[in-house]
Image (cartoon, rainbow, N blue to C red; front, side, top):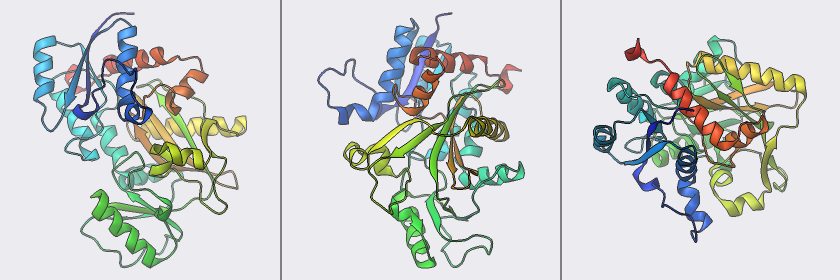
Length: 341
């Protein structure tokens, strides 16, 4: 394995301390991914420099001049607090001819717009819930005739379950108006209202540029969910440790048949190619009571924390965490943007 000079890009408020000794879990959670990736890269023997990025790109330019890195390990998820600008940072890296890890700008743009990505997947005959899109300037007056309640309302462009709660499932026009307004006001983005699919919450990891590998299908289990409560990945489910204990949250290999597993892997690869993704991604799906697979969204550059779903599913096929980080790094170096041609 060739040792590289690696510039790790992260949000300035998530730059971790040198050690986690004596630090509370609640504090570690904020920057655990950054800490884990840095630790893995150092353990692999790479020459690593960490760069905290705020509202300007100057720290990246200065690090490039000072350290002359071979590649940027990109852990930036937004810019100016807007998730849609993740592609702009990667576009800039391509303009200055800097190799980077993770997804390319086109894939980030397509997957980052949940309405647009659903249109693309529909064109490719991949099953997605029917939906309506509500830009910030548009009030809810009616629904397209083909869209039926109940609906699931979320941000069109933000990830990490931002703005998602039990109230995200709406059953009439008044509830829809209220929840769309909530997304507009509190998240600050357009809202998408897609038909709610009752079923099981599944994900599958995909990694690669041209040659793709899928990891085992992963499932979210709610062992203590109150009767009648929908099994959905709300913001509290993802980020609140106490609430996770309350609902008995656990994740692990999906309890599905081998045929279903192979079908999901095939669909995931089709999605990855249809949205022009590269690097690595997580595909979120629902499995309904009839065994039908519904695609919810694709998430390029998902959480790379040690012990989280993407890394855990990789380990199930023998890819230990440092090897996973190295694979991400290698794929970044081998990706060919236009400037390389």
